[in-house]
Length: 119
Image (cartoon, rainbow, N blue to C red; front, side, top):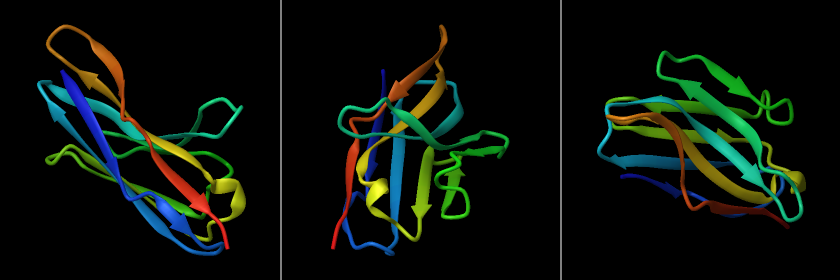
């Protein structure tokens, strides 16, 4: 069983910054890719950013230049720092990880943390 627990969401003013964090725990061999998706009401879940275990990153065009993803492979954590937040960043942010368990490589999801950008 693999659990992902997010933290760091909340209310932020436009132009502000926040950092989301996620920690994976449980029984597994390794984490291949770890990152963040977000989903707003009535919209599909979309990738925000992710990072492979080797350090390769991928960012959505909407956050390029405003977001930085980082990982600590030893601690099985991933963080997402976002700057210059705007109203369109209001969403529920989900941590995800492609985890290599003893049987299969499969995606796992956290429960989500809400980010609200409002004045």
